[in-house]
Every structure is written in structure tokens, then in C-alpha cells.
Figure 1 (tube, rainbow, N blue to C red):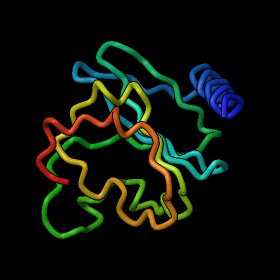
Figure 2 (figure 1 turned 90 degrees about the vertical axis):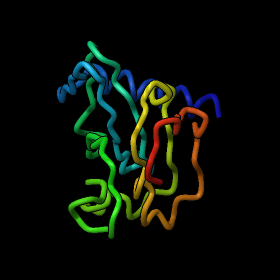
Figure 3 (figure 1 turned 180 degrees about the vertical axis):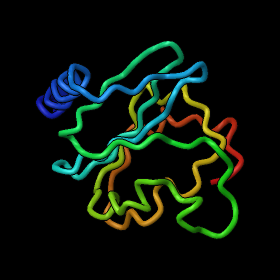
Length: 134
């Protein structure tokens, strides 16, 4: 277990030193990275005034659009990681500690279609105090 955590920390540090930069605006930016080889999806938050770097070698990264989804599911209101079918083989969802500072308005369809996901880690970092749509 400790080796696994250490490995993930090393990968995260390598990602922080890599090429694709995500800049946080005055409200911060939440995003999802799909770790295709580990079959994991990670939820992150980049606070206002900071930058974060995500390695393109890990897998696709998507910005979380913070708006009220509502209505019938369609490609217009589903998260991009679902539309792109990046979720198909995911078996673990990890909500990173940085995500605790993010206040989503909607979590609708975030895990839609994750039929192989059998583990969710870091659920304590999901703040639903402002969520209007689940």
C-alpha cells in the first residue's frame, strides 16, 4: 500500500514538471485526469492564482464545467470524459485532497456509465454544500 502511494506521488510530481499547463482563474479550476494504464480517474482542483501541470502521457485531462446540468442526458450536458468514452474501463475513482476546496454546483453524470468502477477513494474531499444537481 505504501509503495503504491509513493509510486502515485512520484507520478504526480513528474506530471507537475511536464508540459501541459492548466492555469487557474480567479475562481480556480477543477479537472479530471484519466490514468489509462492504471484504469483510474482522478478529480483535482487548482486554487485561484496557482498553476498546475498535467502530463499528456498519463491520459486525457478534462476541465470540469461548473454549471447546472439538469434535463435529459445528451452530449451537450454530459461531462466530456463520458462523451469521449474515457470512462469505459475505469475501475477506480480517486478524489484528490486538493478537490476539498472546490464547490461544484452540479455533480450530475460525473460517474455515469462507470460500470467497472468498484472503488472510490477520497470521498471525504467531495464538498457538496453548493450542489443543486446530482
